[in-house]
Image (cartoon, rainbow, N blue to C red; front, side, top):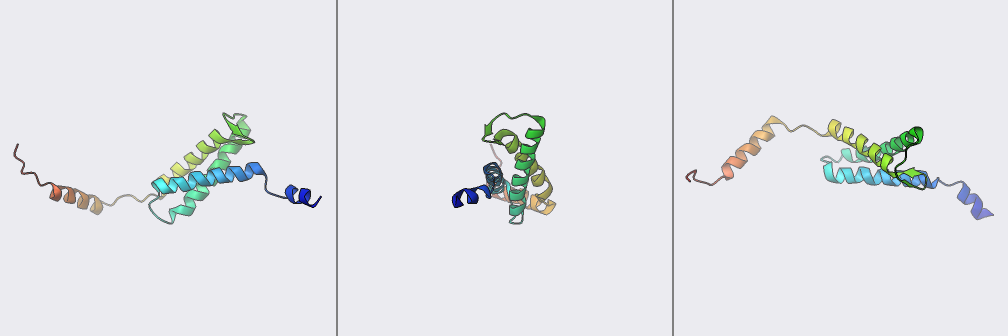
Length: 117
């Protein structure tokens, strides 16, 4: 009887799975595209919220390509990737003109060819 009560008050499995998958997408996004440490929590939260938004949109539209239990994987993943893409565009700093000039100068200095064919 006690074990049954403890299980009834827990977190729903679908919500736990959706937050886990959103976290994995957000942290993987930061591993590939993240440049600054302050982007880490933004990408994590964006992955979780984006997965949730994609799941809710799937429920409202009545479309689910592939489900694992009650969690729409494709729609949730697309929602997370959309939100992460927007966050990446907003938070990635632009490369300054000074850095671009230094790179071009470095490339020219390393070219040891004589220019003769």
